[in-house]
Length: 211
Image (cartoon, rainbow, N blue to C red; front, side):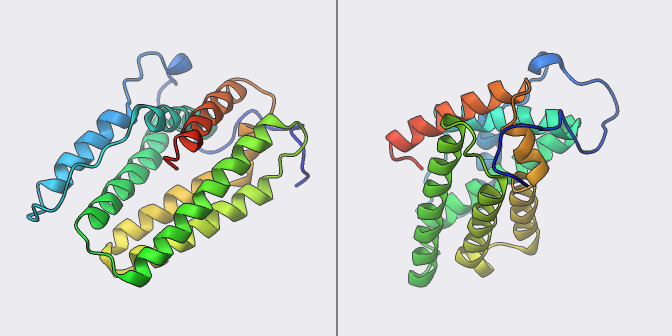
């Protein structure tokens, strides 16, 4: 597991019945529309008027769309890629509702702040590994992702169901997969283009202090 961009495999994972959509053509999956659907469904079950709308802005939506495309390429499964992103968005929307409805206690908010700080450092590291050749180390990113996962579990604790905690494990487990990180940071297309656009989006989010 060396710190290098060389030797990445073109893809891995399971198979999916049916052909892949070329370069995303005819694939109408949209993380932004999915977020709106998840938000509408969840808020319809919440009686508190303190709850305000949760939304994903254009930049974060672009990053998520690229993560979806890279995941679909890696898993060779449109269904699995959609499941990963759907789980991510469902957790994000539920977390937003918990925050805006004031359900998290003081200690939980401290843990959530630590999660945000760790996620920001993770984004900075991900961008740096892309910008500076031969610095990439998948072990560093994988470890940081799993640290974020653990902090999130602790922060939301009993406020989320076992099913939601399972979604957190599924999402972070996928993105912390060292084989996925290796191909994402490798020289082969389409991963190189996906990573470039992901890092462009992360850079904007860091500049705007939205991550």
